[in-house]
Length: 277
Image 1 (tube, rainbow, N blue to C red):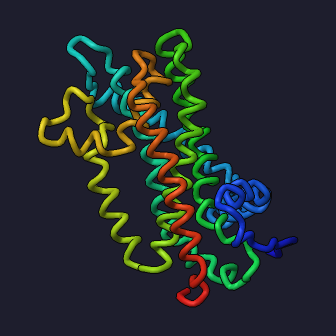
Image 2 (image 1 turned 60 degrees about the vertical axis):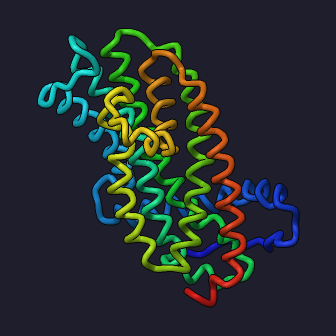
């Protein structure tokens, strides 16, 4: 694949201008994400449409399993499908985070030939995983919203909270992608460390249990987990109920701080990336 253009880096520009300048590379990011999807599903019959089919099957399968097999309940006398929706609403943002975190660690190594170009905007490379993950998550959200509406017979008024929640999630994941993209380029063991952290982190994230079921000793760790607040917002938006305003504020602050920290860390690392890759 040939690239039609490259742009000089505004390396001496103020930080806000450099961040806003990322918008200029949106077409490049989209083309790289589409290329990545085509390569991942090369040879398959429907191509990268599998990226949409998989989350649809994922949501449907988990909903059926937790409704008919495990038959868990959020409260005594509660309906099993409510627990199924509770689990799936937590799994969607967790899977998105896991995929972005896991693939970002290898982003620079996989595109080392592009890193050698001094004027190539390499800050878009870790964001490729975020773009492709968003494609899958949208499909999963559509399926989950459809099941929730079918189960309850109405659209939850809190669904309007979903758009700002997704916007904050994108900001947060962009910061994570830059942080792990820089760390993965400097230290190759980061990929394995992230895998271990994700395996342990899943149990410190309230996906399969509620806040009330969290053991008292683990509650401080669970509350310090940013994904705890993101998952709460997803459940507030998709399943209704009282909105956790505190979680919204906390996650908004964490997302912005992570975004800035990730971008600054990546900018400081990129100067010597071509020498270590």
